[in-house]
Amino acid sequence: MAVAAALVSALSERPLGSGTIVFGELALSGELRPVAHSGLRLREAAKLGFEKALVPASVTAKASGDTGGMRLSSYARLANLVDQLLGRN
Image (tube, rainbow, N blue to C red; front, side, top):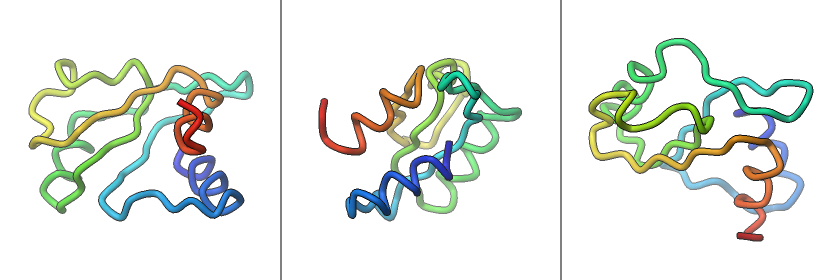
């Protein structure tokens, strides 16, 4: 998911925010899937100063525990993430 976001960002010349973290797994079908230890990843990212996380839809703030005040944006499919990154939503 992070590589896909980086490619969209580079090709569209629209940078992701410097305080944004992206993680998740991209299926061949375009579905975005969670990765192990999402809550731990979010907490550590918050400690490092990240303010926003782009994550698969199945990762929720409640399921992840304390996210240190980070804003979560979740997506079920790659197309949804691309639309958001390109400002189509």
